[in-house]
Length: 430
Image (cartoon, rainbow, N blue to C red):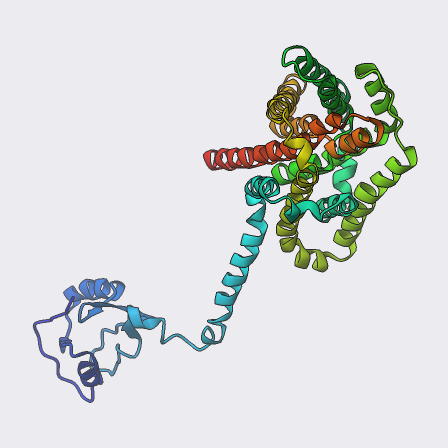
């Protein structure tokens, strides 16, 4: 907007002429201003002037009633679209670092969000193991303990000792998880094992394999799944899984004798050593690193999610590739449906029974998800090892081999679904 005032101006050495040459605008000011125009002048002082259609920003506009004195308005007003380039040099030196910081933040964000790809990666590893078994056959059982230990190390790095102390203060939840592991799940295993033999007409060895899967302790992957969905309850899940694993040396032989009719001796020393290597040492290392070397934790923390996804994919694809002949047996599809029904029932039972028992708890939804993982995901690898060692019929190992894949695939699919539901709930609350 151009400012045209009707009167002409007379004065000495006004610098307004230079302003005219630069911007090619005509600014005319009156030689004298009466008292009735003072309010109008004050209004113009508050409004940002415009030059050739562009707005002007004034750093400290001041107008004096004595227009015979010199003033230079142009020295304090610059077009708004160019003003950012005429600021002091204090920002120019820092113009590039924010760009690099933004790129670095984006890269770190991508690394942290790689966990959302876990269900897709698990499914892809399953398909690759079925199509080309040698791609995962190299990942033998000797790598399982270090791989699961790495997942527990990731949980420890993202936790503190206070979290585990708080978890121990929830004996009711720990007991509920134990009941889900060694009471609800064996009942479901006995039910679907009986259905496999009586209704589906499958060999007795298949029913024994399904029951054997239901007799073992919880899987370490359940703790990792809880960490992805509800990080605050990951220590509680670790305590539940560790307790069920520690007592499995006594409970699993008893349940196998009760359900299958055969007492399976379990190596007590080997079980204790396994718990120490997979759970105790990695989590303790992560907690100590987080406590005494927080900068190192901050540096490695963004890289843990993609590495954890890779390790999980190997833990899922390898048992399927190694036992591909058993999985592709004539009874494979029927066993597949029965294992899906078994795990689905366990997930649903753990979720809704927890809702009934802890309906007054403030974090009941998170607790339901945690106990659902604990009930639906078990150490199928242990069941597979027991089947290969203590049963002569190779068909007994088929249900544990299929369970290893389906348990992981279904569990991490629930991770994806519940994580999205949590995000939508947060958006609605905000």
